[in-house]
Every structure is written in structure tokens, then in C-alpha cells.
Amino acid sequence: GPRITLFKFQPQPGTKLSVLSKLELEISQAIKSSKVRIIPHIPNTAFSGVEVPNSKSQMVRYHSVLEKMPRTPDLVVPLGVDIHGKLAYMDLARMPHLLVAGTTGSGKSVFINQLIASLLYKHTPRTLRLSLVDPKQSEFYFYQGLPHLREDVITDMTWTADLIDGIVQEMEHRYSLFKTRGIRSIDEYNQVSPDILPFYVFIVDEFSDMMGAYKKPRGQNHPIEHGIVRIAQKARAVGIHLILATQSPRADVMTGLIRDNVPSRISFSVADRIASQIILKQNGAENLLGNGDMLYKPVGQQEPIRVQSPFISNTQIKKLTDFFKSQGS
Image (cartoon, rainbow, N blue to C red; front, side, top):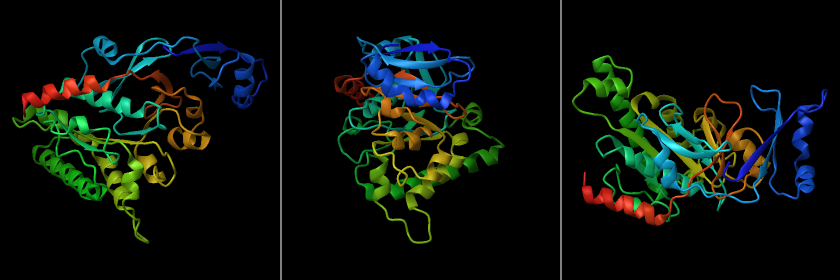
């Protein structure tokens, strides 16, 4: 891979796999390398694995990934390059919602920007609508005025409960349209209806700020948590998808209800094993290298895939958004 090499090995007979995961520090010291990650069992093989940082890293640039991206369905976007040097991508329609975690400098915000850019390359405002929440007021300012936006980029967290309620209403409205036509999915609807329903992607750059803006009433559900869970349970069929990112993967932010209902995960480098357990339900993210090194764990997959996310610069984002703004709606 661009930054990691995977070494496979067969443990001696009788070796407990749980013992292997405790040897990371010893192996790091022996090979004079930092951030070694052990895979006790590589799925569908008889091997275990050790992921070791390369002595020379290769930067994965966004335009090089985009050029290799095949023509794909509507919500397929690139993830980056895996440890075998192959293009990795994900389908938001299958996920259908995503939790993202990573500390400052891990590459989380760059990943979200390249995800938005990939969606913009494939969609006009007629086929895609976006809602962007930016508590830090520094990540999504390029997108202000973009014709794909359902509303202005939201920076005031006291508005987000109303936004969630609006998404729930949109979801119920779409289901009522489907019911009158005897249709079960957005793809079927758009094939038979002259009025296309756009895909709707809701992206939050710092979910902890959004949760922290509201107190949980005693004996009641947290207003943000309740709305997120309701959307996550029903919105896939109507083309509404959630991407919730945070640099603080704590249990009071990514609650049990949210984690149960938002099944797909991406983790960049996190502070410790506790944070890795919360986002991935396993160790490993604490040993990532930062700068776009990530573990991708889609719904239904036991072991995460290690991927190097591509780098997209602010200059590229500005050129892209300026172009779409000049096109109008």
C-alpha cells in the first residue's frame, strides 16, 4: 500500500490468537518502527498479519483516485487506496449511514471534503441535495452558496433540532408519495415519476457539538439522538443518508442507540483503545498513522479494511465549488 506493508505469517500450532494482539510494542521495538498493527486472524485464510509503516510513504492525491474510478451507481464514492495498492470505494446506498471518528490531524475533515466533491462530480442539484453542519465554522465555508444545498451551511447548533425534524418530515413525505404509487424505493420512484426525487445527504463535521447543544430531558430521549435514530431506521429506502463525524468518539456522543442504528464505520487515528472500541468495536484505530490512514468497516463486515484516503486541497475544493456556483440551480 501507499504507506503500509502487510506481512502474513502462520503462528505456531497451539498459539492463542489473543496473545498476538499483545505483541505490538515488542514488534515495534524489534523492527525499530512505530504504530505497528497486528491482525490476529486474516479472514478466510490460515494466516495472521502484521501491518508495518513503509520507510517511504506515497501521497494519494484525489485526482489520481478520481481518474481510476469506474462509472458506477449514483452514490458510489472513492475511499482511497488499500494496502494492496487497489482502489477502494463505498456505496452510500448500501451502507446506508456512516459514523466517522478521528482526532485533529488524522485526515477526517479532508476525507469528508473529498466525499462531498465526489458526490458533486456525479450529481446536479436536481439529483442531489445536501445539508451541512459545521460547528467549527471552518470546514464547510467553501460550500456556502452551493446550489446543491437544501439550506445555508449551519453553524448555529441551536438550529439543528429543527433541521432534524425537517429531515424526518421529508422522510415521511417521501414515504407517502411511495405509498400512493405502490412503490418501495427511490430508484423505482424515479423510474416512473416525471418529478425526480433527489438523493439527500446530511453531513455533520463535529457531531459532539451538535449533541452538546441540547440537554437530555429527564425521563425522555435526547432530541438529537431520537431524531437521528428515527431517520437511521427508516430513511434508506427514500434516499436519505446520514454521515456523522466527530473527533470525540465518546459514549455520551456516539450513544448505544446511535451506534446500533448507524452500522457502518470509518475510523482515522484516535487517542486510545477506548475510542477505537467505541467507533469500531475493536482495537486498532489507536495505531493508525494519521494524515488519511483509516479503517473502513461497512455494515455486515467483521474485520475493517485499511485504506489511505486521498488528499484534496482547499484550492481544488474552491475551484470545484466556484464552478457549480457559476452554473446556478
